[in-house]
Amino acid sequence: MLEKICTLTDLTPLVGVPALVQGEQVAIFRLKDGNVYAVSNYDPFSQANVIARGITGNLKGYDVVASPIYKQHFDLKTGLCLEDETVSLKTYQVTVDGDNVLIAHH
Image (cartoon, rainbow, N blue to C red; front, side, top):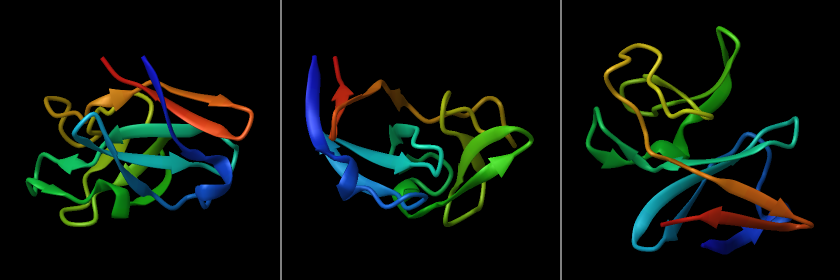
């Protein structure tokens, strides 16, 4: 099921925005190339909902967000932590329909 979360104009490129999707905190990012990603806002290392405050960038060819607390990098496509492959963030399917940003949830 897709749920409208916001519009593209609500998202500043490279700056995360937290949202509540079916009771789960989600961090949404719009990159400069226009791609939009949604991952869990929960940082498994610091055990805090802070990922939306992370810094985005590209590391080793991956579009990533760096946790604002301990600085681990998470691949925005897969959620995988680049420093510890046993840890990952939950990812959400994002669909952009016109100006609307929709997130799939189960």
